[in-house]
Image (cartoon, rainbow, N blue to C red; front, top):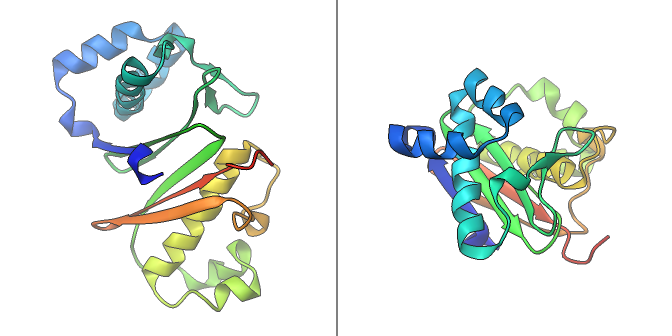
Length: 177
């Protein structure tokens, strides 16, 4: 699965690449990019992937009622943190999340984790590994009613990558649950 996770800094996209990708976007997606230029990186990564592995294009993007970007027959998820964008692509429903490892407020543990999960959290890195797995699960299911506390990724294919000061996690529904 880690072969299908792509990471790029928005500062690595030059003006020519920006203009090229921007010209391919729908009017709705152009507005999103103009509000936050970092979003172009998501479209850039997805465009490169689609050119190589699919007949679909970024013009085929539509959105779920909860705002998740979708393309028929292509399962993907995007996450952004600071100037880094992560794209995860799969043959199955997938969610991805990224967070920067930093000191966290220990009083939030009870809002995000069950007691047995809290016992496993010993470091800042542990906190963000488990937190990003739960966020990735919520993204995979596209269910905003799920509370992060109840997000259960354990029944799915999942993994975590630590890249520098960032934790990237994915959850993938390989069994079609």
